[in-house]
Length: 170
Image (cartoon, rainbow, N blue to C red; front, side, top):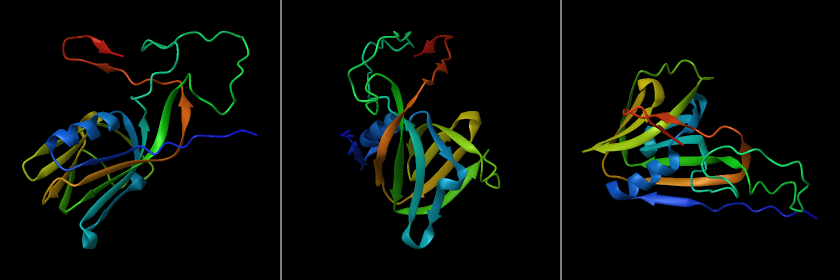
């Protein structure tokens, strides 16, 4: 009998310091445009994301992909302990008074965005995406909730970024 472990990863942000932790967890998350919704009557903005699990450190990984040996493992086939992972994640922002976007074609509901970071600027919460797209939320206060949903799955793609000084973070 195979047992699987479901993570119960949850984070709540009520100030800029907390928000920095949420932003770090969500860096490089993939966001289907079809999974973004603003509920004005509830003053709530929600998104379903596929986040890269940066907090995991697979065995034998130093930040670079390593060749796998051909030896069999005694671990369960469902245990992805030694792989990079993504996981479905829900983001909820409460006390949202307005939503604007720039550089995002909202008509392309089948498109995906790559979330780079979240930044707070006074009463604005900016979701910054690769390619220069921004979703700007007018907020009465910082009230952000993040929760993983279900189980992670393996991915062979570890996000990398070109930094201003020419170095690559891995």
